Length: 124
Image (cartoon, rainbow, N blue to C red; front, side, top):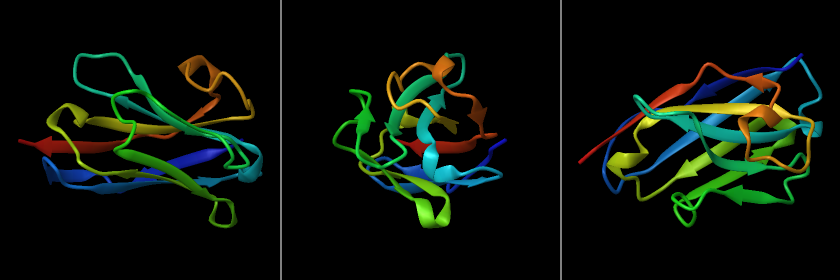
């Protein structure tokens, strides 16, 4: 059983940056692929980025590509989401999720474990 805790959210002006962290415990974290999802008010939770257990494959949704960077430090059981050039439309609760899958990392249904989320608010 893997427990995930997100941190690093907050309020930032448009064009600013935030770095989210997803800290894991309770499992062999290095064997899990991890995804970041986000949910804006009144909208469905959507995929943002994912990284395989080895760190060798990075996947981004189109709206964040070139602005967000996902990375991991398996020695620290942590996955990061560096968010640059933030826009008001990036405002959402951001969740990290873990799975043993190494493919098909975009659907929410691929993930078994979820964190509680961290709020990101980007003001214009």
